[in-house]
Length: 88
Image (cartoon, rainbow, N blue to C red; front, side, top):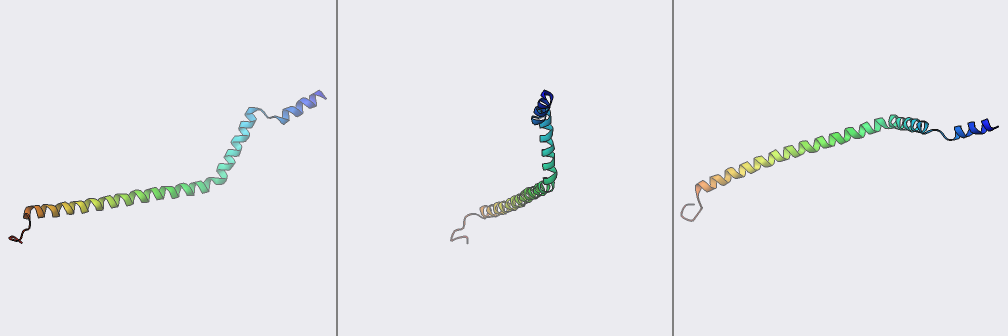
């Protein structure tokens, strides 16, 4: 009888190694079930970040061109001199 009681108590409380193994199996099952969803989410996030960086680059280049055009116009006006009633 003492052997049965010891055997039952051993079955009731798994060792820390068995607990860790069970936990890792559960984690692996979770990742297997959700891998496709996570992959899709990661792909969407990557595309969003890429689109934002491309848009930012295009807008900054356009802004740089506009500023260069404004600088060119300002140089022309400075070279012409001030507009007064006598030289307009």
